Every structure is written in C-alpha cells, then in structure tokens.
Length: 608
Image (cartoon, rainbow, N blue to C red; front, side, top):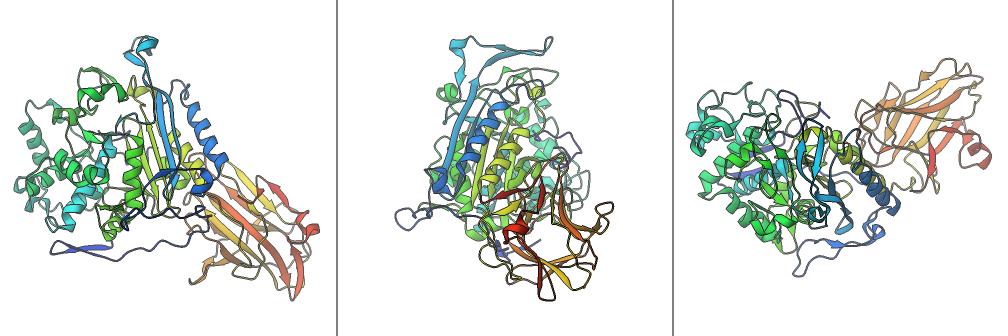
C-alpha cells in the first residue's frame, strides 16, 4: 500500500551517475564532505577476522551524541501516545537511535496490542481486557509495510552485482509479458526510482486468483512515459519481485533469507511469521470496509496490506516483518558500505548507487535505488542530499545519515485500531529532529578560512518552525569606507523554505537591505551569495564568510533566520564575528565589551 499518500500525489507534497555495462556497475561515486560534528568517543572495533563494525549498546557519549537530546526524543515520542491532536498517533512504538557502532537509545513505549476492534459509530477503540493487552518490548516485531521495498531493492542490486540483471535493461527483456500496454521501454532503474509511469496502486486483491492478480500488473498501462515523471507506486516493486523470481528461480522470501537476513543474523525478520510469533507482534488494524478493501477483522500476525495479503503474504512492496534491532543491523550494514562483521551483502559501490539521487530532474523527489533521499517530511533535520530512508503505512520508518554516521528506527503501530486515527509523520519528524540535534556541532576551530578566531561557544539559531530569529550587531561607523565583515558560518536548512539573510540598516531599523556575501570552505571555490541569503545544504562544515559593508555613519548589521511552519533543518551557527575597516577593528565579538552589545532574539550561545 502506498504510504499515506492519495493517488497522484507525490510523497514529498503530502507531509544520473551510473551505467551498467555487461551486468557490471560503473559508478562515479559522490564522496561525502567533511563533517564538523563531534565524532563518537572512540571508533568501534572491527569484528573478529577483519570484518566491518557491528552494533553494540552503549552510552550517548560513546556514540558522540548529547544525552539530553536523546532523553527529550523519548519524552516527545511519549506525547504521541495521547491525543495527536484527537486520537493517539500510535498505541505504542519502539525507538532505536545510534551513531557509529553504538546503539545509544532503544526504548519501547505503550502497547503492542491494545484494541480488539474499532467502533466506527463512536469513533472509539474497543480495548482488550487489561490482562490480554500486550506492552511493547524492545524485541516487538512489526509489519514493516512499505519499508519492505528496501529489502526488495537490496536483493535487486545484488543481482545487478552478479550480472544477472542490468540496471538500464528493459523489464520486458526479463518478463516479455510486461512489455504490453505501453511498458516496453520501462527499465529496472525506472522501477527502483518510481519513474516507470505506473499509477500509485490498483486493488489486485479483487482478482480471484494469484495468476490473475499478476496479470493485472502485467496488463497495467502507464499514466506517463517512463522517465518523464515521478509517481510513487507499489506496482514498481511488485514488478521487480516478478523479475527477481524469474531470473533466480527462487521465491522472494527465500531470496530474503539467503541474501540478507541469513548472512546478517537477522533472525526476527521474515515474511509470513509463524503463529508462534503472534504474542510478540504488534497488532495493526480492525480491517473492514469501507476503510479497508477486505473484511478481515483485527489483523495481527499477518500482513496488513491487502494486495500483499492476496499475493500470499510475500510481495515486493510489503509483507516483511522485523524488529528495531534487526532494522538497525541492516542500516549499519549499509552505512558500513555493505558489510557487517564478516558478512557482506553488497559491495561499497553498490551502496553508493543506492544512496545516489537518480531523480535530479524531479526536485523534491530525490531517490536512489529503492531508497528515498533528502525527505524532510519524515527525516526532519536528519535530511541531507545523502540521507536515505523509507516509511511504511503501518507507522514504521528507517533513516540513515551517512554524513554523521547516524541511524534512526521508529516503529509504531499507528493504524491500531484504524488508519484514520493518524495522519502525517509528526512523530517521525520529532524523533529525527531530536537525533539530529543530538549530534553536536562544535564552535569553529582555531581560525576560520578568513582569519576570524573561533571561541568556546558559537551563536545558534535554534530549530523552531514558524520563527524569525535575529542576531544583531551594535551600530557601527563605516563612513570611512572599506569595512568588511568576517566570520565563520555553518548552515543546514530546509531548502528554499527556511532562509538565512544578512542584512543592514542605516536608519535605525526602519528599512533593512540584504548584504551580499561570499562563503568559502577548504579546497573549494568561493560561493557568491549575491542576494545576501543562504539556504539548504552546505555540507555541515564551517565556512569562512566575507562581506563588504556599505559606508554609513550608523550601520547596523543583523542575521535573520526565518522558518516556515512545516519542517526545519539542523539550523545555523555563527562564530568569530569581526568587522574591520582599513586595519581598524570596528567590532570583535572576542572582546567582552563588544560581545555584550550583541542583541540576540531567538539565538543562543552554544558549545554543543
């Protein structure tokens, strides 16, 4: 089931670098930029035998995270157990967060099984007796819904590595019947990036047999030419399942076991969990028409998605069950470049491919192979051009940030007892914002690129939405000309929606005008900011900043950071503010008297 979106609406609105030659990958990798964030206290040791790091529990400090923000992550998540705003967003959840090889937070909240039914007349949940309700535990297993698409995508990339599939090959070259109804030019890449032209969803479960359900997919005509539009569709991953099963001669559940869960030791991850697992599985929905396509009553221990259910519980788009720790293992494996301990499921070049945006022609809908990229609507402030993840309709999500080597799992039973009780991704965003804030940004080290000296703290804009925060210097006499501002600047904001502006007034604040500036980072060409603004992704590193200032008897400078109401980035830091004119220092925040005259509205001093 497409996660939370109505048909025809992209996931972003609600809420390319590779060639394949003879089955082999040719990839121009996108190196990650340097990270001006405090690293974990110590690197995790490699596994025995020279393998890649594996997960272990540890403190926030060991993970290089700020413990207070992890505590607040839990507190904020608990709030969604209550009205959000009218009903609980979930009956319960399991949260897991970490960095490097350290899991610093693993916390169950609320109930895995609370309701036996939904009463549509009163819009209330009918609870099980207290002694039959089941609380969440760290090991509770969830129906992952569309997060299952990541597993199918990994399995497809494995076959690309082995030469059994080619990324740019037509799907019809593997499944001849797929080519009918105008789909002969659809490639595997189109399926993996949701640019095939498939509509979002069709009710396969209405067909009487498995064969007829598959035929509906093969007969489906695209609504747009391949590669011309982004439209998230379950049919893409169902089609990919058919390709994988055809070329390997094995069913998708066997491929999952042999290719991912077996090698990685993910023994609580599988399709169609056995009946013995039911007491440790989170319940989903009281599924009945009209809100559900099938009349099944309380769905608990079986896949919720109607189409996946009709396909026998094993489907490319949904059907995988897993727990938070197992998902973290998958995430750590990918952040490691495809290896975990002595096991390897992908080559590093393949992981880079999965984390590389193939949809640059569709701004806002960044997509690697299977993974969504740079989606603030659920990644919150963890979102960067390389941040990868996915959500599931049942209330699940996985977010991986290679820039800070951090990972977040939020598993909630948000359609228990009914899907209409929640909308949007507020708990996911809140958790991601808090984890992003838990990765410290240290003040600019030593001297910045233009000679300003960093201190023990820097100015921080905060991360609030619907806010205008200003940082104002005292009035200065720049009438002699040649005055220049120099400072260190760090910014990461929601692109275009949240704007940082350097501006000046010469009339006491009646009118403010933008001041153009230049930023520069090591080993890169200077960047001109002619409009006096900065927004979006800057690499999460400190930049040296220089700005020529207008000549005036009384010039007041300020930074203004304005955010919209929806999502925010990691915010803005400013350090080492200094104004000079022809060798004279007009202002230097390193001098206590000057620093005392800075007016901060919404900005705070931070040492992180």
